[in-house]
Length: 132
Image (cartoon, rainbow, N blue to C red; front, side, top):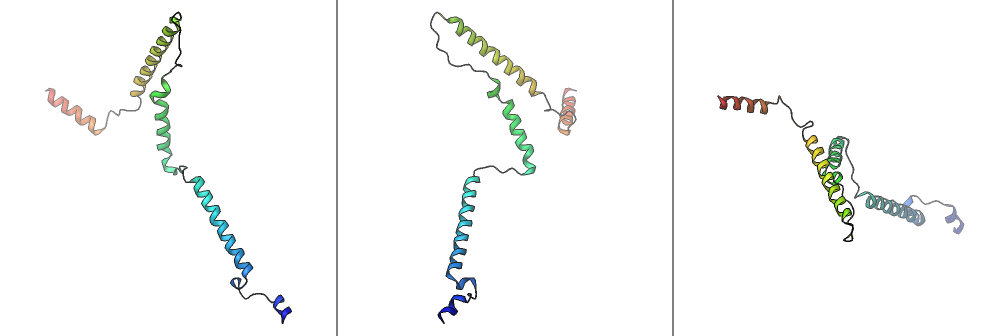
């Protein structure tokens, strides 16, 4: 009888305590790995394929923004006898402003105006009627 129990297999997985324990440990490991991957990726942005144009528009706006155009030098501390440095910094800031405003004015007119939309045609017609 003693030896017979050693050679018989359990009827189901739940009948054998070691196998049931291994299954529980496996489930816990899967849950733990899932939670680790979830915690690692929950802050990442997942972009759907139809949102690519929105991401491209945001990237373009970032490139056109004021921050990248303006050229700021370091805050230099000049001795009183080195006023040429202060003058150079002032001229550089002014040139940066001019380049920024010139580029911004150039970009304002690109692709922003459609001439034959119904609203514009209606406004032209209303202006013509009012001027008569």
